[in-house]
Image 1 (cartoon, helix red, strand yellow):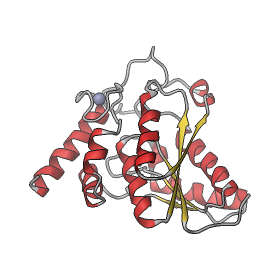
Image 2: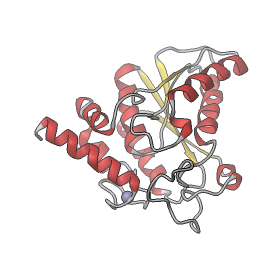
Image 3: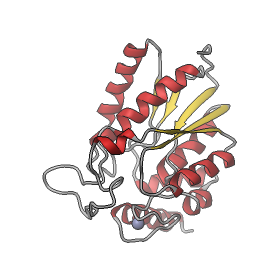
Amino acid sequence: MKPVNNDRVLVVLSGGQDSGTCLFWAKEHFKEVWALTFAYGQKHVLETELAQRLAEKAGAHWEMMSIPFIAQLSSNSLTDDSIPMDEDKPADGPPNTFVPGRNLFFLSIAAVYAREHGISHIVTGVSQTDYSGYPDCRDAFIKSLNVALNIGIDEQFIIHTPLMWIDKAQTWEMADRLGVLDIIRHETLTCYNGIPGDGCGQCPACKLRRAGLEEYLKLSKK
Ligand code: ZN
């Protein structure tokens, strides 16, 4: 464990649009960016390769951590090929793309990792604005987990959520303002079918991403 260095930040980086944008947000706000990517049994391993490339572009110190138990714990369509993916959010709960506990584990592991490296600032790309029905993307969850981690680890972590209250169009606007619109557009993977950049165009993640991009490009007249 190292003494806390407030110039240092840790980004939980998946390789998607949201965490990718947060990586460059972190670069703007902190001198030294670290990024942690989790291999949790997701079907699309390309995601983690893209995360590594993004980290290189941002000049971040990157590390990948393997936590395969996430896929063993529960069945969901992001880690299990035999489960067809929900196209829409069911009326009675989150879609089956929800990986229960994912952000709980990610952020808890990130906090322990951060403490080890003298980092108290942690960034996650969760947002409750374009709410997909994932309960662990909500602000109340992140804030209460932040409190729990601070008590349980006896540290003063600050979990930053730059995207919490902005929608997808505003997330594109942020990427543009940070000078990385093209990088985020072409070198991230959000698509549930594993196609990088603009993706398959059909899955719920692609639809949300594309609608936001179109709205932003229209507004900014690009
Ligand atoms: Zn897609």
